[in-house]
Length: 208
Image (tube, rainbow, N blue to C red; front, top):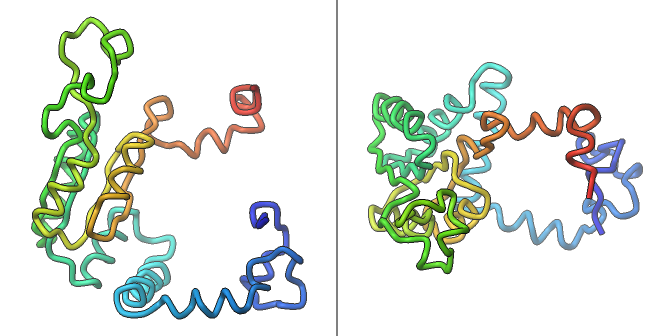
């Protein structure tokens, strides 16, 4: 069992092999060599350019600037933007920025296809709005497949729900990054719950 979250030394970051915990992944030399061999072709190019984006923009570039920088370094031309209906305004602004920087943007909203929630077995009383005769389901597989059909080079997730993002990632042909995640309670800043875990949110997070 690996427990890097409980480690206090982080010897891996300093190359201090002799100080590694007994269950550190770094001790599995044979497995590490196999993993290192996977960094080739596209994977190596992504890793290389990611490292440059990190070092050259460290504490200077915002997430959106990092995405643009990375996409340009990778020579991506066709960008797929899979976004949530609840962040339509943000998607419009984001798309405008991406186009300004010369990218061809294919954007697909979560409700694409207009499929009823009844299709996945959700009855009216289980809908977000039970009083509605029709409530469209989120269709992340559809979003992925629509973008696949456009042969996008790179797909960006904007605010997809938990689980819906899972399905999109599973079905996307192109590499993916996440611009923002959904958290309706915390203004799409889920780390706020972590920062308050020892304070106001303690009972919420540690109460079964």
